[in-house]
Image 1: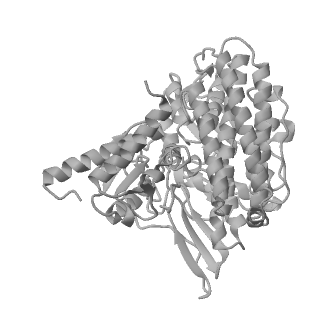
Image 2 (image 1 turned 45 degrees about the vertical axis):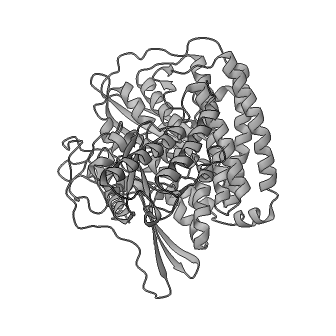
Image 3 (image 1 turned 90 degrees about the vertical axis):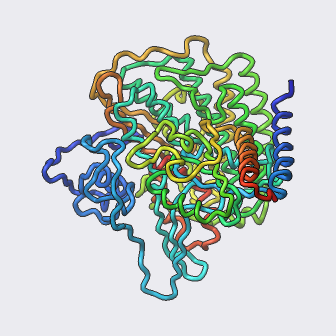
Length: 164
Length: 455
């Protein structure tokens, strides 16, 4: 059996390969914190550290939703961030792949639905892939990106569109 | 509730309020630290402070109806309130020489949300309005009626990187309410994991502060060593952020002989590498130049606002609840509380660096003293409507949890006062007179979690 390190390395190479196949270019991600505890945010940050370093494989976190292929949303959408999430979603370019990162984004987590929290991002925006975990490990987030690429490929094929 | 560290006593002041006219005299002018608490109590409970200098809403944003108060018992947890005309207000400037720069709530990097509005003259910041509480999830209300065992999981999800501090503060409050003394081994283990939490935070923060002035070596080394420590956390406890480690009445995670050795070996390595980074950073002229005299928080301001944690100790305010109101096994280990007078970014990074070495020393002592025995004891039936407090020095400073027990082992009321809540009001004072491009650096040097503050 492969060691954890080797498996992580495999995941990253798979990421590069699938990005080339499906998108034909690198992948740009915009992060939106819709009211998380910051655990998921830190795990996303971890992906750019020298250990995981997914930038080396062609994935980058960008400053503007206009430049993003994918939105990674953490948190269960608070009342105070609903507008920010909607504006970011509207500003993102197609195909607007939304990946829900963590239990809160997927289903509201332990906080659930309150006067201040919607309890899951799919109440507000359509979701491509759900990545559960509290927070999900960095490898799980990479896996989530891979699933989103699969989904994108499938949807493009169904639409009969040119994938590139 | 006041804490008198010198006498190791807490003092609770109680007063009755007329339910038909829920007002009370404000003390925010005499005691600036009370400013936010009074505004919060007005938002969430509808108790109005008379003579408060700032009428703006705090925890709930301006589009929340003014007459709805979610923490009142007749307000259902999931009630949806309509959005009303916003009461939000920011500083207005009469001069055309002042440029307003709005930033956020969504920022350029992977950072938590907050809205900052700078009033700048050229490059220099005249005034900063910080609009926070974007991540307010209403978790204190969500805890009401929740079994205390489940509420522990809620407590450790208040914040990702202070998860353990929150869970231990909550557990202590419940244990105090039930008159439970936890086994000595659990005390040691709690202290051990709390220091591991401080280590990965402080080392990560030192790296992150380097990002404030583009010092790439520092950023990468800080992130790499933080990852080493988080992987150690995972090997020992199964969780990179130390969640699920604590139970009410003790610990869920134990440390085997082999794991003890792992901690020892990993820390030896991290210590050596961290020392190299520190030697590089603190002898680098450009790094020092950027950090020294940047973002000074004056002692007078720190005292007025009752600032805690790293920010307090970097401004000459010697507070550390590990020493002042010892809990877990902190009264059985020796450590030094570093204090610097300068109050600038450099002082805040120095406090963290010194504390990292103190943590290495504390962990070494703990590993030597670790007693055999049970790690958990049972929580008896809790008396309803009894209240108790638990506290913890999180990596950001003192975090206090107050809990009132409800019927059938549930939470009746809960209030979390995180270190960040005490320190945020100080940030606008520290940025005044600095240049706009230094704001990220100053902000990073305080390293406040929005999630802790907003709840």
